[in-house]
Every structure is written in C-alpha cells, then in structure tokens.
Length: 102
Image (cartoon, helix red, strand yellow):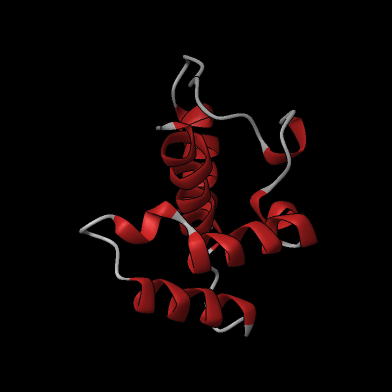
C-alpha cells in the first residue's frame, strides 16, 4: 500500500510538470474490482486461505514453506503486518493454477 500511495503521489506530481498524460492503474475508487482489504475481510476468502494451508497443493511446491506461510497468515490475522497481496497471490496460484491441473 505504501508503494501504491507513493506511485499515486509521483503520478500526480508528474502530471503537473509534464504536458503528457501518464497511463497506469486507475485510482482505487475508479476500479471495477474490490480493494485487496475488502477481499481479505471476506469470511469466504479466509476459509479458502485456511483450506489452502491445510490441504492445498501449494504446500507441495519446493519453494513454499508451509510453516512460514502459516506464520505469515498468523501475522496478518493479528494485524501485525498486512500480507493481503501475498495471500491473494497464493490463492491465485492455488485455485487458478494448481487446482486445475490433473
């Protein structure tokens, strides 16, 4: 989120200086998809994440440490850190790629 805020500020500053329009991601309020925080507050998403860590194929990947991932999820639930983007990416890998493979 800090990076996104920094990019928004930079984009705004460049628009004032440069005579051209910068194309990129739309502002949060202009998006047709939900904000990451809205997804992470969804009970259905929490259930998917917990199921992924318990029984998911993602645990079989050599570069994934199930213990570390559960620790990251715990930090997220305790609101120590915001790991919403990482958790969303893991869900995408699990349910978008791995669950579709035979």
